[in-house]
Length: 391
Image (cartoon, rainbow, N blue to C red; front, top):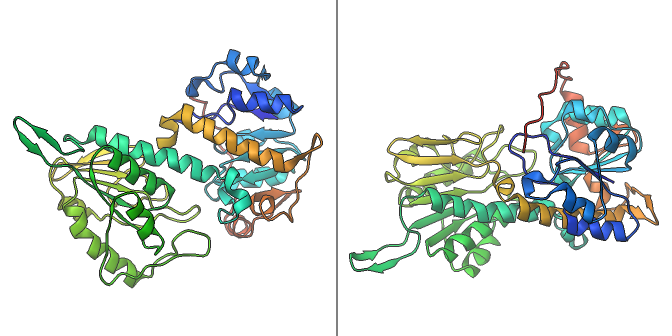
């Protein structure tokens, strides 16, 4: 198997770490690692080599390996190096990269998108890279918001008087939201949490935070573990009810996102305008799809009237590349245990875990929703790929 250096701007994670490479090598697997693949995660080539990996060029890895391991998706140009029968594994975000998906299918490669993992299945838990990376990102979100906020998070008793704790509101109580709540609580803030799913109430309360009740807003939960999309009427009622809670918060962290769909709008420009000067809003969902905050911009920090800092945080897990890479590598090790049998790669489309993650297989786009999107969207004209930036 091969580990490639990530090509996305700002991406510092790496798919495997020496600890996992050593275990794979001990089990009889050969691991090739691209030169400087781990530099952004503070892992040297020497550390990989000491664990049993060979350091090679990217072209060699594409040419010689059975399985290509990545964190994020390859570009369309990089995808042209894949070959029939080769397996591509990663958080591939295929719904954002339809031209790359076409290239995977055309090459005959099998693409395993960890984004499609059926997270409600117990046997899938150790493979759940979305959860491991969201946990890192949620922790980092609270730390970053505390760093930007100009006041204290905890209540302090000082000779100059008592300092009240910061009021922190976390919108979305999935893995990232709960980790943000827990971290803000550890920092001493007064924390509230909100989610439309009924199960979130107990989870928020278990962390010592207050659950926000919104009168007139119906709790909803989808069958895949995510919240279902609200109707227009439900969304309007939600936004109106949230405004007053946002206005009295010093820090708002939004975490609501569903793979393949536009994130729900939770914080309007009007709500931000009613916050106190010096407040901070951190949008974990900010991306090219939009975000939870109307005025956020992907990977940018802006200050809007009346002096509210809005952070479009798209690379939080990458900001903690060493920790995030270690967790991700363990997820991949668990997946490899499913698809490598007696020294051979075995992909079973009928397997309820592996089959659900297949984006392309045997020359075709096989994920139902993805197949429809590829068929409905014309291929983009070929353009040169940008040069890789240094980690």
